[in-house]
Image 1 (cartoon, rainbow, N blue to C red):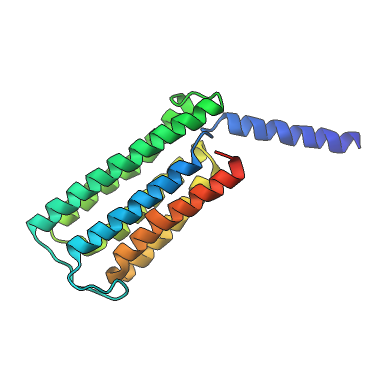
Image 2 (tube, rainbow, N blue to C red):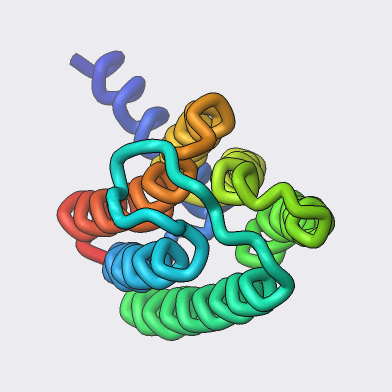
Length: 205
């Protein structure tokens, strides 16, 4: 019995040390909000770039300088709204847990998240300006997924799982180009909502 208690104590200490080395104040509600924003943006993007009305088959994509400007503007607004909501809600969660929002763990999380995201953003802008619109949605999923996997070691393990799912959706989207936006909506929208609800139920955040 003493040996079992000793092993259990060591396990609990290890878990505490592991959590203390990570940023664990992520908000599940922020995932839901970001998912809803992504779904709205996906619908607007669909109206901007697809010629035909059916969402479930390969479609002609409207390509022009005007379309690119609109997509870039929509992307900027989407990112600003999503990031703002995540920061605000995560700040509220960190206050409840008595954890500073900006500490060495959140810095490491942000750095490891930002490198693949900025790289992917630049790649996508270059490809878009050269007319490769069809592969933009899958690539954003892949680079976002890589960013989550890269940052996963500095936060909850659920983030890494979410990242792997995003990468898989992106790879599928690269093969089925006509379904890129649908898969984007599934990844950034539906998966974020599911992830957020799961985080809320699992961690109460």
